[in-house]
Length: 194
Length: 157
Image (cartoon, rainbow over the protein chains, first blue to last red):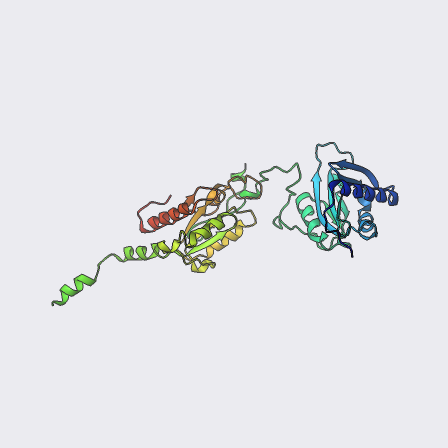
């Protein structure tokens, strides 16, 4: 496989990204909702229901070969007035062959915050999606092991949601006091309520 | 030479309590509970330039069962607090705790849902070290403060 070792200019990369976006629009005219360009970086907004097919197309098409899933993250667009849905799940791909990156965004609404898992295509999606689930509560369908990854297993909230207070809801106060002589004194949570 | 004369030059009489405190204070075995950048500074204290061995506290033990001074160096998150408490309970008595740096003492700049706002909310702390991170001299000073507490020269803070 030919690999481009020399770095391309920003302009060249943006041009290739535009071609990628064009290919995507041609192949999935219904699924590609929008395309945004800022500082030579292109974001393609797609329908959340078709993310698995689109990602497979990006990965396997010989002219694209975005074989590397570098990141999955999420943006909570609460109070930003987005009509497409509250959560934007963001996918970053990289093509080793062409030295290009592409960004996909898929909006999911709050009352149906779920999207297909990319684990069938990339094993690395496993932990990336668990993190998004842990922080935002977006559920990934067909994920093999969708558990919390950073927060304690008994957590009840999704801390990166915008309506979750920065200092939490008392989680950091909910521990007993251990004394020097080994006694454990349970503190009532209400007495330490903020 | 008279036998009693010979003994008086080689034997020191003291209270047993004082003797035990004296030996304890000069043979602290710290347990480093390092979770962040403070632990790097703690390593410097143990290395040759600052050399905590001069104060008898160089025997770092990573097992709580073998240590009597816990140095909590770094921020403690809500997932780590039960671990910290468990390790503290596993230490044999008598035991002392140093909260090293702003984070262990107060949460520091991390006023967030996941960081404990001072470990003294949930366990006893004997000496606090300010700083972010504290200088090695400050850590040595805190060990000296613990020593004074052990020998009863300074009241518990």
